[in-house]
Length: 72
Image (cartoon, rainbow, N blue to C red; front, top):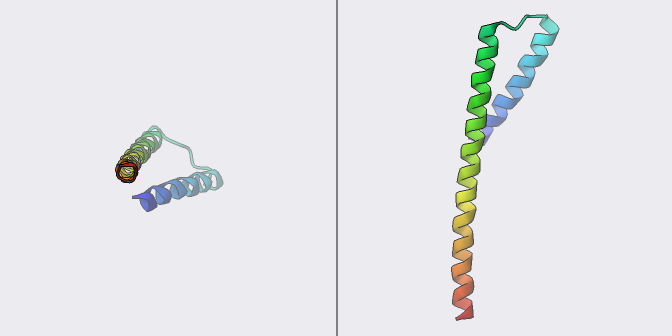
């Protein structure tokens, strides 16, 4: 999933460079597409962060159990 996000970010940069060189005008449809893509990227990043936070929470809980076992 992270590679997909990275490709999307790099692809957007390439599109902006191509647009600047080609002198193409942004239409309402292009702006709408761009907004949708940015929303998808933001959603994917939020999902990845949520998963990562959950993973770290579980690891910390396991560590705390081990620490408590050592204390006992």
